[in-house]
Length: 394
Ligand SMILES: Nc1ncnc2c1ncn2[C@@H]1O[C@H](COP(=O)(O)OP(=O)(O)OP(=O)(O)O)[C@@H](O)[C@H]1O
Ligand SMILES: [Mg+2]
Image 1: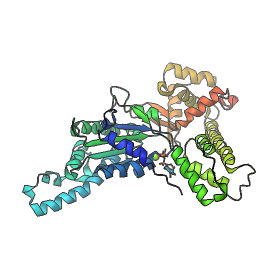
Image 2 (image 1 turned 90 degrees about the horizontal axis):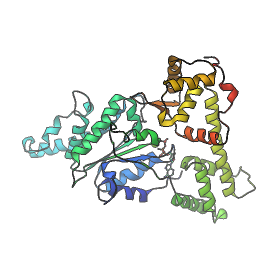
Image 3 (image 1 turned 45 degrees about the vertical axis):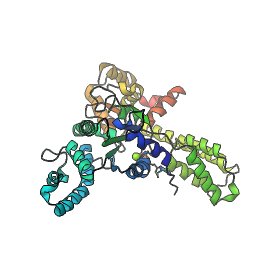
Image 4 (image 1 turned 120 degrees about the vertical axis):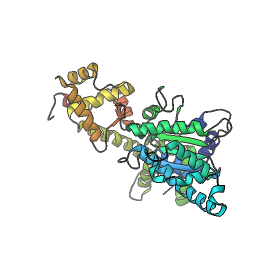
């Protein structure tokens, strides 16, 4: 298994987060979006976290998708509690030596870290302040799949608390709380920043750069070391194959393993076989989406169709939407029918639809938008038109 360290990218982000660069706004919060499986979580945990720690920052990482059964607010509070617990132990030991009354941090000793964020516990703002004061270091909170916070009211309130903690802990001269939020869907992450009611209004969502030419050069060097007969490896073709497969390192390595296998039996160079196999992989993704779509009930298909077409303008139950469904199905569609269809799209595993606490809907996987646009452009939408007519077995 290959794990390519992205030290340079981490080294660029650290000073920006710590407010040491003249330009940019990362010290107010860094929002990073990137497609699924492109290495976001790996970067945050294996590159950014250690780079921040090397600068003396206490890093709390939490993945809101890690446990989708729990409220995102609880997941965030627990992660802060887990980081705070050992610090309280240190304070307690120091207090024992120095005498409790002489210790300025003694007030935090009463904190019950299992109750953070609850009515009878410390607020998130105070918990982050406790962590900062007891550790005597700046804190970075990394929230992976942060858009998931918006699926519950408590999660949304937690985001507002984090913003408030940032404003209270940071001053013009010192950045004591850094926030990094990542997500696989730019549109959903945008909801954290793009309206005046959004918790981080005014911040920008940036694209997480995909693995680049340095990753490809590294992979090529490993191939050349293990299979000297293949040197020199054609890196430009490798790069094209990596792009064709959507910059997804795991899939890329799998396909690479296939074409390098002694059983593959290609007549062309392995680089060209890789390019062909990568394009084939992308076609398989599209086939999967097509069969998922065709497996839906007709009413679910037209609701999803409307969502794909409208993007962030999607309003599932307005008169225009109901007319759209009705025209495609050639029979009237009521509000409750549309509601049931949306709910079943949301309840499927894996879910096809995402719903925020405010009742906004979006497709779960933004790759579906690209699939839709491409089929639209090539005139092959909808997948099989005659199957969309009639309400079928609903
Ligand atoms: N720098 C890297 N070098 C090699 N492989 C990597 C690298 N980064 C990620 N990968 C591999 O790619 C796969 C996806 O990585 P990761 O889970 O970090 O992506 P992600 O963007 O967070 O995905 P998701 O959208 O599912 O959350 C993993 O199998 C991981 O091992
Ligand atoms: Mg991830």
